[in-house]
Length: 84
Image (cartoon, rainbow, N blue to C red; front, side):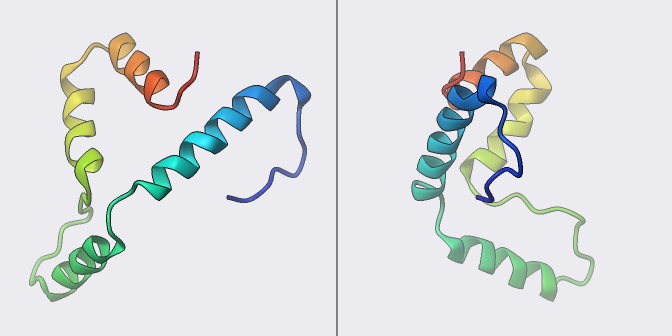
């Protein structure tokens, strides 16, 4: 992750929590081979789609966003990112 060009002290706590959460998510993420396989599949396709979802969260997250009320989806996103 790139460091910010300027830090506002008011956001130090939130920034640290997000940085930690993102690092954990990357460490626990899906195998990069899945992304490579999807790229190969798209490259070989006669009519490739504009977007391909790779990984568990990429599969179910848009569906949850479509069926959940916005405030409930945002609550879940905050919990996932360990935010208040």
